[in-house]
Image 1 (cartoon, rainbow, N blue to C red):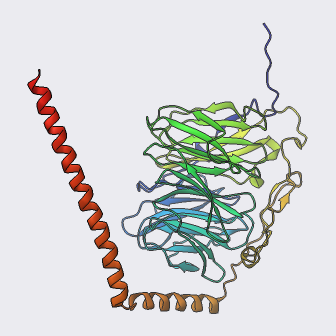
Image 2 (cartoon, rainbow, N blue to C red):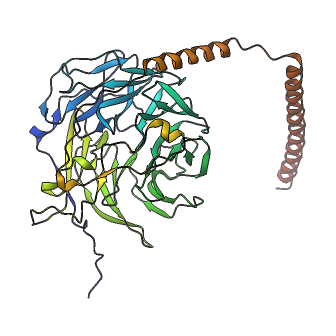
Image 3 (tube, rainbow, N blue to C red):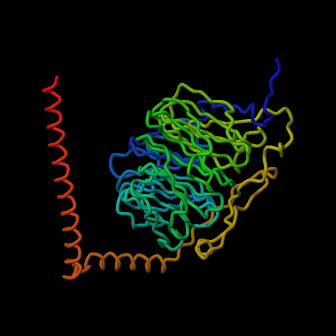
Length: 472
């Protein structure tokens, strides 16, 4: 009996963990329960959130600093409360942002040779959120543009070169659980505790589209599928089954694909490789990494394989495509965070030839910005600048973050003045108070009438119940 096998260059992709001496051991990973990936990766460094006795710390590790790390690892320790999330600047490998429970977003400069001593003073501290900052994410095409989300139910966009808050997005009714940019950064997509999936215009802060997402009570994640107009979300059903949904941004009434994964309890962390169209799903608390191929046909989603391990993962980092090892036909590399260790896992395509595999390495996103922050907010749009991996990517030389100190001081002064004005805002005058009292009186009267109607219905039901008991 013959059957049709779908042709795919990635049908035999396999994952291989690094040897123990090539991992990063002896780490004191944070025990905070906030849902983030905990680890971020760029071509030069690995960032991981640490547990500390007081304040909030995270460290940055050089890729070649493997094996058992020092007990007194140098770190960034400027936050006064636990660090919840970090993100590397995609256009400057030596700049990293952090968000913390102390409500602040901080920008840090990494020394050229990595951390050799702890640093407590950031290059810039961004204040504006009123509650803990749970996520930070740099823009994919505009230089020095950072998004941060907070438990105060807002997302703020910052120009880190001027210390200026460019936009405050306050369309969410509950906690933002995850966010992601689209390919050119014109749109933001978010999942929220109110079980809604939103697509937001990043320049105006207005909701472009909104729909009901996963209906389970646990958290959900969102991932924009590269240069397509599709979004992937992971979450839970009402019965607590793990799910994967694919959405078409043009019509978000219903997901275009629904996939039931399993009944495990850990949140699924999605990662998408736009060059190979592979979607990786790593479950928190289990050791498995599933990967699927996204194809433009009626099926849309094809399961490829699953990397299995007995060691559970607490978080996961995704290496930028420009840094993979093309000599070994490595298409992606994930960094698995365990209890006290980071284990790299390399995903490769088996090939016999030593020649550059141009069919699986199209031009990929480079490390040069397509726009400035000002150009972006003036309405200009551009796709990421691509590079060819055949020429062997080399990280750019260290660039100093140019900060306009006058602008930073001026923006800080404006914020202080605005806060002072809000604090000294006069109490409502008599007319406004009278109008508000009338509205409250009407609401009170409506509630009283509703309660009376309900009491009458209850008495009627009690009489009916008594009558039925007599006839038994």
